[in-house]
Each structure stands twice: as structure tokens, then as C-alpha cells.
Length: 114
Image (cartoon, rainbow, N blue to C red; front, side, top):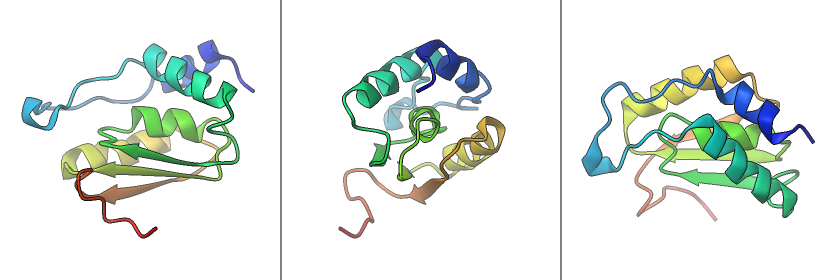
């Protein structure tokens, strides 16, 4: 398992929102915070070998952090098409070990099959 610091460093290339929309609660997540959250989840066995769902994925910071920690699958659900396009670009920059399946949709009514 990579260190929390190395995870934060890898996330340093993630671009944020061009025009954050407060109505959609689009706020930046710093790389250090994303690394801390995902590191703790991984320590509890909730990332490696699991499916990770990021509701309201924004530009992908948390989904990409998870994708760097060996999950079976990562799904990033985001309503804003512009943020989703940025997230896809961020995925290329981060070069995560697991692909992220980006889905455009509303987190209050996720378009996901169970």
C-alpha cells in the first residue's frame, strides 16, 4: 500500500472546477484531504478489491484517489457534464491502476442497476 503522502502527491495533478456552482455544492477537495479519506477507508478494507462509488464525483478527486488504491471497480456519478469532462481528463493525468466508470446522473436518483 502506497503512503498517504504519495497518494496526495499523485492527486496534485487533478484539475478543479472551472466555474463551481454552489447550487450543485461544487467545492474543491484538496489532494491531502482526499488522500486522508481514501487512506482511512483502505485501512478499514473498504477500497482494495472492492467496488467504490463516488456520488457527486465532481472533477474526480475522490474517485481517482480510490482508483489508485487497487479497487475492483470505481464508479464516479456526476450531474454536471463539464465537471465530468474534467474528471475524464484528470483520469488520464493521474494514470490510476483501476479505470473509473464515469456516469452522468443525479445522485438523488442514481441511474445504476443493482
